[in-house]
Length: 596
Image (tube, rainbow, N blue to C red):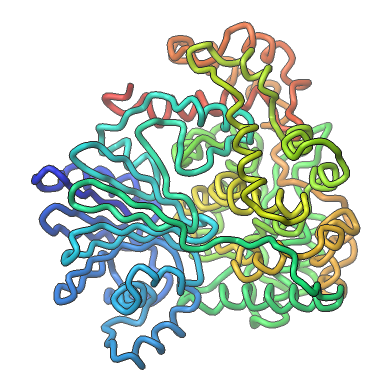
């Protein structure tokens, strides 16, 4: 797990070494163990390393093979690298290191652009092929690892976060109106390739991008999730057994492919508890677990310790229980926002940031339960959509959109307004999922698009801010390929995630399995009052916010007047949504010289 960056010139000039240094400085927290760079005529590659696989200097990056004319920077983990290495050795390739980085480079030598289809894991890759005079970029199937880029007539730059690109300079920071609509409609999700800023784009998951020396780029999808129901369909017992086998394999892969200890983020919910149970039963002893809690609120508990403690007691894990007071949430919020590659409104972003700080003092790698709800239909809105009638978009919008289009137009200044971009996006993506049943098309949209820029990005950004690698076994692509074809009724049984509940019986305490679905609680960012309300009011009435001219002032005033009754359909604070974007812009865009 690392941070990567680079520049490719099209104008006959040489890369800007100062820009590369500035980009690397904004990636240092992602890779505290080593910094490297490589220059080759029109190309510069930069890398910050977090040593997890092959801890020796032999796996430092950029990884360069002068004879082959290939240089590589890579962020992520390839869980089948040992199998690929054995196959490549059988084909006559030699190796100088023991890690997965060199395997990626040799795989490209062996299979060309198709190499990416053979990689199982999470990755963002940038590869310079000197002989073909082209830069190749690739991103894993579910976008677990980020890859941003900016392009002008003269050059192409890429990085693991937008802050690095902004620090390098020359970025058009005007708003993308389509992205703004998505941001305020889909819980701050802006699907690739867009971001909120016109001058920064991101490579979509499961895509390969090739940029040639004339600045021409070609992007194509290398993998497609198929939601078509199987014929004949397995029976219930077969579905459950496939779920158990594939999840166990995913969990074990993410435990054994590391040369450092691997812990688990234990929330107290079903998903992370099941990971602990499987690892304890099949992955060895001496398991490290970590839980975080916040202060209780009159309307909501701030921790789930009563459930996580039961799992700890059953499996005798080496547990770390972390309690964070409300004043620390507000005090440390600016740091968390500084490490968001894009603005996030999930209440648990700062929770993950503060948790990751403590966890990184003990381990470099953790497994986390993100993805289970999207893959196995665990959220409350899925059965609502399943039962509803109407068009595809109506069924989705009614239970999911943070605000309808007419409210968006009342919120945003006219110069940023436009048509209902988000409804058009949803309609297109649900059609693209093919002939599957409605709920499975929704889940297809969620796991290929929405989850990428909400929980997955949140976990990557907040953990990597502390040099902590988070692995997400529920997004193993073989597990998802199976689950997306499973009958919706099976996933929705027992209020959702029935397959996981069924295989957890006897492994996880019944109290954890049968509890109502809960969410990572950070009450202070949901029920906004006191110092948090003062903070958000100051942001939204600041000179910077007023001069930005993004929000209509009457809408801002109405939300400030009654913040605790202005919630989205998914119970997010609309006041926090407004304040979070403004705070991110002030911290990450306004602070960069030349920001537009």
